[in-house]
Image (tube, rainbow, N blue to C red; front, side):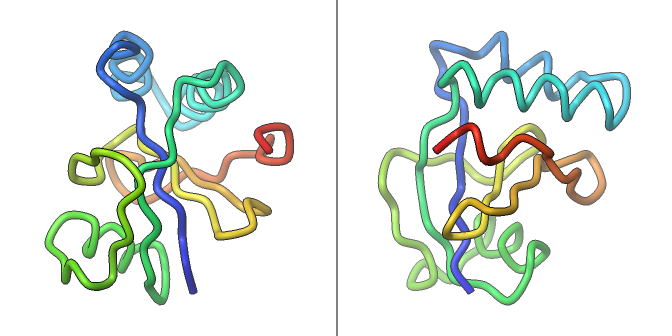
Length: 108
């Protein structure tokens, strides 16, 4: 399966920081959803992987041939958003695991 990686660029670093420092999952989800709706996230890569854990591993350690880069990309970290290829499901990377995002349909 292919997954898209969305990251916040440096000019919106305050938004990324607030997501990274969120108090809990609900706060992180709300802030990530708001940042996505405001256009702060950029599609940086598509990764071919079996599941979200494999996306995280490939996005941090490779192999490079599983990554199609669309923009400059840092390693996958807390606050990044992962969507399935047709953007019908999405998750924000949490300190442990992934939090599902409810409003993925409005980002298309």
